[in-house]
Image (cartoon, rainbow, N blue to C red):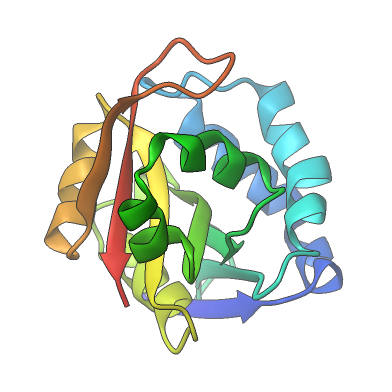
Length: 183
């Protein structure tokens, strides 16, 4: 299968892909450990992406089959800064040295998913490498569920390191790890 990675930088560029994004998000995140619903997938497409597309250095990368045009995966992020939910949840738990190292010039990976039927074909690696390529940031940061061992192994192979163990986001009873990577 031939794969194309496309980088989108505006909300308008995302519009043609909204339905396929909803479907891929649901297939990728409805399974354990995420257990997301169809309503969560719709929220992701209709509200969350729109919100984040207005942030500095917003990038949304999609992977699609060249043969069929089918969307297979996505990743998106932006510059992290005070006033953004994820940043403001995590930053108070970092030492001043950690904050300066990881957040003072950091790129936040917000959401990353590959359709389960397309996993283990290198698509996640292509998406990961594309979104980080050429960024003007010193570091990249993200979170993943503590129990999501496949994701943690994926990130570890790509040079990510754990910044915080057993982190709990407000309103979420599941533990996460906060990861960082030098760019």
